[in-house]
Amino acid sequence: MGADWIPLDISSGLTKELPEDVKYRWGICGTGRCCHDFVQALKGLPNAVLACVSSRSTEKAAEFAALHGIPESFGSFREMADQGDFDIMYVGTLHPFHREHAQAALEAGKHVLVEKPFVTSLDDALALTELAEKKGLFIAEGLWTRYFPAVEQALHMIRSGFLGEVKQVEADCCIDAAAVGDTSVLFNKELGGGAHFFFSIYTLGYATAVFGTEPEKILATGHVSDGIDFSNVVVLLYADGKTGIAISGMQVESTEETRILGSKGGSLSAALLTVRRVLPSAESLRAEAMLSMNMNQLIQRIQVSCDEPLTSCVHCVFLVRQRTFQYDLPQNPPTLEETGGFNYPNSIGFQ
Image (cartoon, rainbow, N blue to C red; front, side):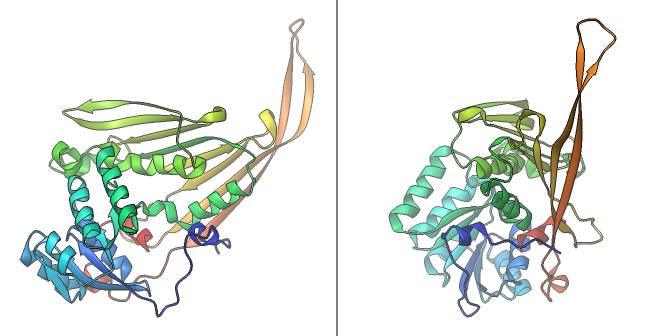
């Protein structure tokens, strides 16, 4: 059973819940694996309508449309942006093309959701956000983990002061990419490969969500070969002694955890909040998003004399209170299996 929670975009007044009779028509930019999984998830949302799809290939666009029951397909991204009958475009193409395709949609007066990473340069990011603001359109990065109920619950607890003043956020997201082979886009510099563009977006996203402001200083290092970073560590230094530590890589598997530490209880009593992204097995796409809360509460402090002269030690006894919130994942759309399932097991989290 999950904890009660209200999405932060609703509780903060940025948006509101939609009645089921309000529909948003989606135009899908791309026909790759991410686009397939995103479309599968949209089928389970009452407010989503699949309106059209585009690809560089007319044939691929038509095949994708037929598989997913999409009424209109285009062999050009620009053509869909200009002629497609839709409200919002999902850009799921390769990283270096995100600006081009998102800009086409904005210029055509359409809202945009861009698959992470948003773009591959600061100039591209500024160009898109400034254009969207100028035209009064919505644009956002599709950082799906940011909207998990477990993450939302953690942010609610932080903002309520449960942890006191948050001083440190530590996050890791590493995979062993050897199994996918060196021909994968992960190892292609020209197509936006590397740990930073594929995985750091998750770890950095937690720190920025928790602290909510820009860091005063950024330190980064990593292992780079032929323009591809195989691992990296980014340290974000904020005002008032606050620190974000983000680790990502493609050489080993990590637990993919985020740890958020607050000041409540002083130096002898630390508050620790852990957000874990649970990986379902290949055999089962059912999993649970979990939020574990550990509170180490100092209940006894004892002065103990030591044998050595003029020395003593302090023995601290802690009472550990733990609570785990679990959130059942949404039910799969009824047509999921007959239309190819999910390419990536974790894509069930899109819903």
